[in-house]
Amino acid sequence: MKTPKFLQQKNLKTKLFLFLSSTVSILFNFPSQAMNFSLDTEDPVLLWNQATLEAISNTNIGPTPTSRALGLVNTSIYDAWAAYDPVAIGTQLGNSLQVSNEKINLENKSTAISHAAYTTLLDLFPTQEPAFTHLMQQLGIDSTISSTNTAAGIGNLTAKTLLDNKYTDGSNQLNNYTDTTNYQPINTWDKITDPNRWQPLSIDNGKNIQKFLTPQWGDVTPFADISGNQYLPPPPAQFGTQAYIDQALQIIEYSASLTDEQKVIAEYWADGPQTILPPGHWHLIAEYVSTRDKLSLDDNVKLFFTLGNAVSDAGIAAWDAKEHYDYVRPITAIQYLAANHLLPNEHPLVRTNPQTNVQEIYTWAGPDKGSQWIDGTTWLPYQKSTFVTPPFAEYVSGHSTFSAASAEILKRFTKSDELGACHTQLPNTSSFETHTPSNPIKLCWDTFTQAADQAGISRLYGGIHFQDGDINGRVLGRKVGAVVWEKSQYYINGGKPVKKVPESSPILGLLTLAAFSGVSLLKRNNITRHRKSD
Image (cartoon, rainbow, N blue to C red; front, side):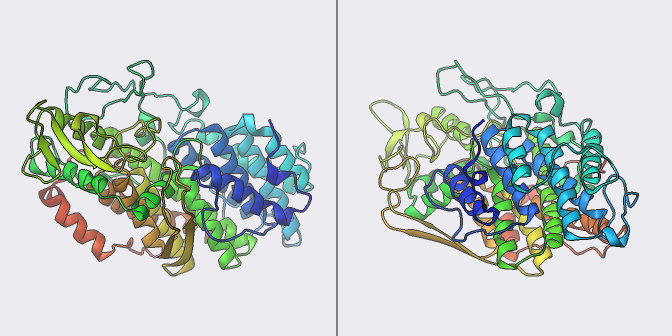
């Protein structure tokens, strides 16, 4: 495997900037950085997180294994570090590895952290071993040490203990995360039996058909206790109701009038295949926060330990809802409604062609085509024709859940909602439209909440999610973030319970949720959800 450019640099303090630039150009399909900042560090926590992000991008493992990997790498880092902290306890071995005060120093912490991360990453991404070994060499650390009475040994032991326990967490890592539930879609790629349910897609007339990615993920053992009905969102709108039609019309309305800014937002947050995906995107944001606030190694350990487990549990909670409801994507719902003439012709963006008797939609018609009338059965989201809607159910939005959970952690860690970051999109740099944007577009986020909300609504601009999936994903993410925060602080504070702080509940989000969801907010699924936590 070719050595990554950032690892070819002799000076460790220069390489993260190079890595960030090259990775983000892949991540967003734009030749620019994700955010307007450079990262200049020798901190092993940040270095190993960057190595993890590159491995994720190179291996294309999908959002659920990605979120788990970020949780495991940063938990192994934390567990190794905890042996060198006088208060913290490990998640697997408690305080049994606690070293004497004279051994608590930056060098030992860095060595233990690096061995823990290295061991974990080799297990998760074996094909990326050359990059991981090269980073160990750049750090001046011998990757072959296997003793248990040294800093290296502590890192190895904590990582192996964690990994051994996680092999049976329900993810099916040892079999490449393949489905363990025998999930079978109700609909086929070419026939809709139930318009409420997810449909696998095919862009080559059935030669290659989507398979639901990790339908077993709702049964993965979480870091925190996210069992119970409060973590299962209310049911989405059902076919035959006005709410079902209204949510489809809303997506059509967005698609018909996309501005350059909305297109940039949709592409910026897309985080699709061959990228670091939404969980990794929020780790980049955390790196910005680390740089902005000049965090120490100890603080970075705590931040990324908590954030990694937040995205990990957010993936479990979101996929639990996805598998439970198995809900239809906009592309299927809109095409089905048009095929059966169920969209209201009185709507200004809908008409029935009198010559062909085809229900047509005025919408974005494809790259560089602008908005025009098209056959409603051919409607597509704002994406490349080969960049299809993700291979799993719509409800709830993973983007919204991952983002809200991450924002909750970052707010609590920094004791502020202030983000203060921007991304500038240069003209004509869209990944699939020649002249988009026509002028520079600067996306700025004053707060973590704004960034998370924009990530959520970006999926409506892109035609990937309905509003219910976004808003209820945000609510779910905040709940997950709150309970993960409490669990992580329990370990960080030496096993002492922490005072519970309610998750953030922005008034606008709740009003939007109430207005859109209507009566569904009053309903709860009466099947109690049970999971065990670590």
